[in-house]
Length: 104
Figure 1 (cartoon, rainbow, N blue to C red):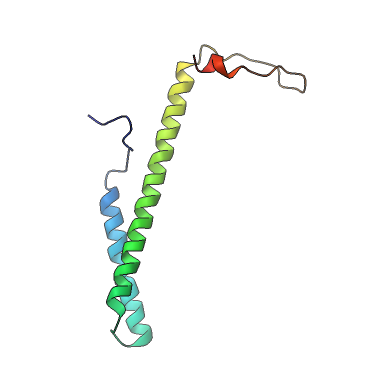
Figure 2 (cartoon, rainbow, N blue to C red):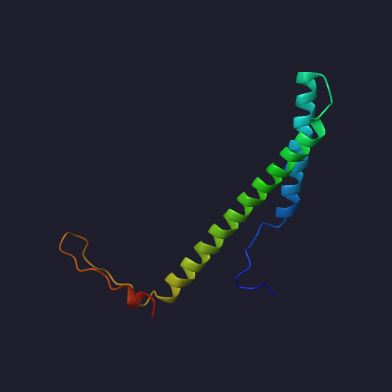
């Protein structure tokens, strides 16, 4: 069973991150070799770029999972408090809605 605090990551989020890191590192090493014609120092830079791209990809996938969790919590809260929602006039003189009645 999944914990309530656990992020609902995509099915292959870790695999996608690793693949993004591998592909970006390989692409950089090819591009660097074609541009400079030498291999010296390319490995460390390619690994660094791969790790950076993998971390960025995983960060983006985590961010989308956090957004999905926020939306599901908001939807659950809306469904839970749907009895309280009522129509009020929206104009300059409309009374403010008390937030407490939505969190009951």
